[in-house]
Image (cartoon, rainbow, N blue to C red):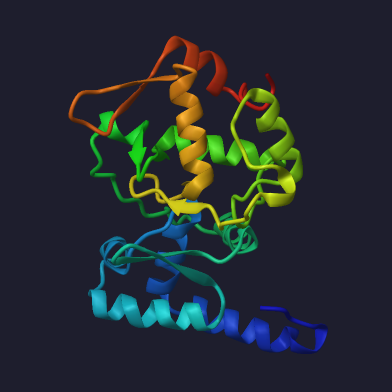
Length: 228
């Protein structure tokens, strides 16, 4: 939400009310890793009942500290902005509180790289999306292509509609193992098709797992995709 100097005292009061409840602070700290979690998972990390967690989450949603992302039949919660995370990070300097964590149940073979609705998912996919945002090839809020990104991908040989006809689609897709966004929709499908054509991955029989090839490592790791 937008705040003016006149609303600053009210904002500080709202913040104090949110942080006055230790279990709400516990859930906010859990979200500091940039991932999104369900109410059940946050309840587990805060060691409270799911119904109690839902009540706390509703208060934090109303005050704009967190946002909710719907993905399939699940609802995930994440910090509303990096500013909230930075503020919490500053607070931690004066405490000995440890950030709660939740171990992933996703098999390692699927967590690194796999298919998801015909686009690339997993740890590699979320890192690649962040790389493209940093290079200004993608819009940070939607993961749609920027004009620069369209030009650069076209030069690499990715088949895209001409820029004037290119449809913005809100291409963020929440990754179920990483709980961060990767590139979905038509753009994600187009990129995976290109990666497969370039032999960046090998498929695994009867599995969604993708194995990065030597050629894929050469072009996709360590920000090489945006630098070559």
